[in-house]
Amino acid sequence: MHGINPGPLFIKEQPVVFWGLIASMYLGNLVLLLLNLPLVSIFVNLLRVPYRILYPAILMFCVVGVYAVNSSMVDVGIMSVMGILGYLLRKMDFETAPLVLGVVLEPIIEYSFRQALAMSDGAYSIFVLRPISAFFLVVALVMILLGLKPLIKKTKDWRERLTEAERGA
Image 1 (cartoon, rainbow, N blue to C red):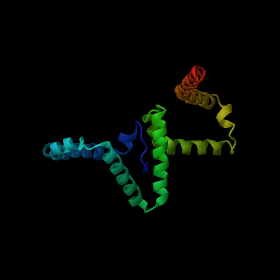
Image 2 (cartoon, rainbow, N blue to C red; image 1 turned 90 degrees about the vertical axis):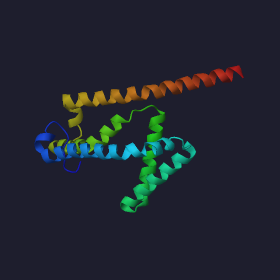
Image 3 (spheres, helix red, strand yellow; image 1 turned 60 degrees about the vertical axis):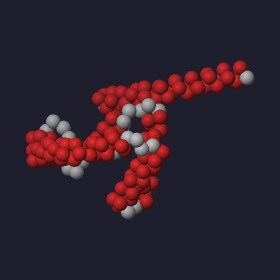
Image 4 (spheres, rainbow, N blue to C red; image 1 turned 135 degrees about the vertical axis):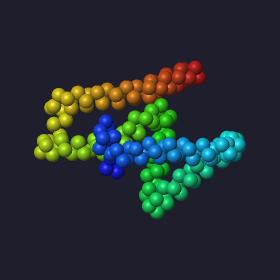
């Protein structure tokens, strides 16, 4: 992201950025300490705000913030769709960390995908015919199926309960 490649060579390739990041974390912690000590009682009172008031306020700040970046309702729509998708994924017990990892690594993966297609003159068969890429595709497919397994089990259990309820009625 922003021309910085994460990985083991990050410290060697971008030492100024790395140490600037470390220094900003120390400075941020110091500022937070100075601000949080006198304001802790106010923060405790925020915990008493009812969810029916808190959630709409958070949503309003999110919408205003997204709109303020580009003054675009398309961005607000994308935020809404992603929020609904995130809610559904949370309800289906999907983990957040792999999704964040996917968003971070997506530009690198897309670049490598285009590079592989260029090397194969646009033939998608390179992803299936090569043993290493075929192995990773199979592993990815297995992981997707394992991720869907709890959803399939919940659906099956729901159908069984529905059938039992119909028999009992």
